[in-house]
Image 1 (tube, rainbow, N blue to C red):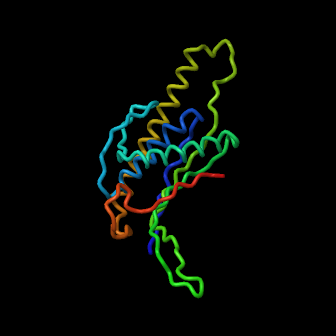
Image 2: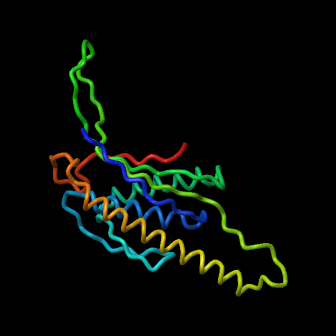
Image 3: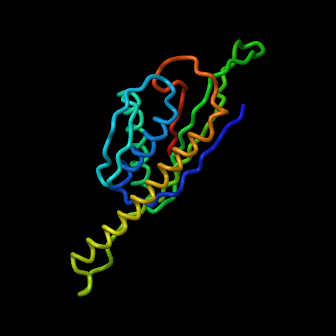
Length: 187
């Protein structure tokens, strides 16, 4: 089976931005690969002027939040590190095994690699030139650049999801997320 991989543009995040950005990115991927019956739910980012769509599935939201919390905990223990969160979709195939019965294996058909560089954004050391206004301006400029990067990643997701569909296996159920998936974070 053909497995497609989408490497998303790297996002440079302050630890306080991780949750909002990863929620936005992961939910956008799931919405575009949820081939079952969804109840679209618009969600506004807390930090940006961006609205994204969730599938409206409480169990999926819970699993995404758990993985984001795992990533946040890892990033707190490993500051100033580049990392990845990987969302993979797969099929479960049974293979005949020798004496031990049936062997089950995962056949991945798509990987989404979310590249993240987490480092605290500290304002420059104080001097007579660094007024509160200047620090706020620098924060606003950086946040605006990040918002642009997040938008680029969202468009990258939409483009990939629309262009790469021939590798998706046939749908065999009507659940919101029609295929098994796993979200992996650094350990």
